[in-house]
Amino acid sequence: MELRHLRYFVAVADTRNFTRAAEMLHIAQPPLSRQIRQLEEELGSDLFNRDVRPILLTDAGRLLYENAIRILASIDQLKASMGHIADAERRRFVIGFAGSTLYGLLPQVIRLFRSQMRHLDISLLECTTVEQISALKEGRIDVGYGRLRIEDLAIRRLVLAEDRLVAVVPADDLLAERAVPVNLAELATRNLIVYPRPVRPSYADQVLDAFYDLGLDPVSIMEVRELQTAVGLVAAHAGICLVPETVQRMQRDDVCFLPIAESSPTSPITMIHRVGDVSTELKALIDISCQLHAGGEGGGHD
Picture: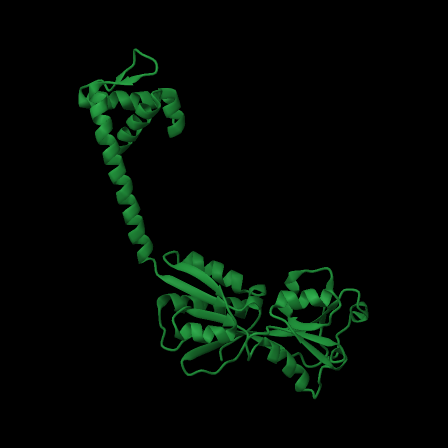
């Protein structure tokens, strides 16, 4: 007697009809009938009275039904318990990321990492680079991808690539119509929208430094919380902003992305983790990240 025999028997007993039981089990009726006959031959008793409609359980059938229900319930509970143990044994691996990194190769990095590390419970947490530092130290994330070169003796940093900055202007702006690289001096005369607002240092400081390094002071600065907000405000003619060139993949038709004429200011794509963390999983993620960025956007270590 096998478990499938008991499941087949219970299905027929519950529906009191071989045809409906076969449909519920997703098998043809003749094989189901044969399986029940084999079970009856093995037990030496008829389990169903087939002379009435709907069919009824015999005394032997009722005895088997009571025990089969208990056995199958125990098996299901055992499977569930084993599943909980398996889930508990899956190590959790949390990746922190700054939102703008998703426009680059990070999604591809994570997909490849997932395919190689199926034993891991991988989750993602959006947070700024500064927030990633504390999250790493507190053990809330295992690795972070961001935009800043932050010095901390407890954190190891790798620079995977340097992302050139481009200017975002409204699609119907005169600068967009010229379709040529734009000077930062010209952009400094516009309202400059920077992000993110809550935490410093941040990507906003990189943008402002691109102007300050040339002795330029933007006439006005608006701080917003997120990249999408900044680009949306540009589309609304509220100002201009500078973003990493990978953000062009956003493919909006109400803004235009223009190269910058000066020696291209850049924003790094960084990967950070705890000093001394030598797990196999982290090493694999570092290898994937470095290889993909070296082949896709250039990059190195810092």
